[in-house]
Image (cartoon, rainbow, N blue to C red; front, side):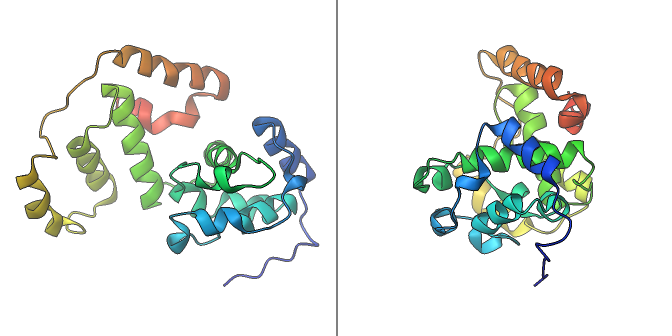
Length: 197
């Protein structure tokens, strides 16, 4: 467990940047813990959601943007739904991911970030996730060839994992969402997704 000295390295600009990007007032969080209690991924987070919020209030930019929790968040909205002050916590976590990437905190060797990028590249290309392609790209980028090989015999007979992608109607509209995002935040925000296109 790392100790963070909250009296040092307060980055007011970082706090204002997060508030401006999300439209949320971070000071309204009073640490009730409902977000952490409702989060289905708390067990794998290095920093629980409520502590991420407290670190944000304390302007701890480096600690927040370099944690794994922001990459593990599934944006399921459980934290947002449970917040008594109606703080859009999931939106904050999503914003932190984008900030981490733009500011160089998202290291390429992070397996979670690599999976995230492979997933988004698949959605951008096909309009939906192509599971087999996503797994193949993730394995190639991380070199984790044998990590989940035991799941193959259980999944394949169920017919849920297809070897060819199924593009959806409207996939061009989905691709335009990525393009609009890149116009607003810059191409580095979806750099890996662009490579896969």
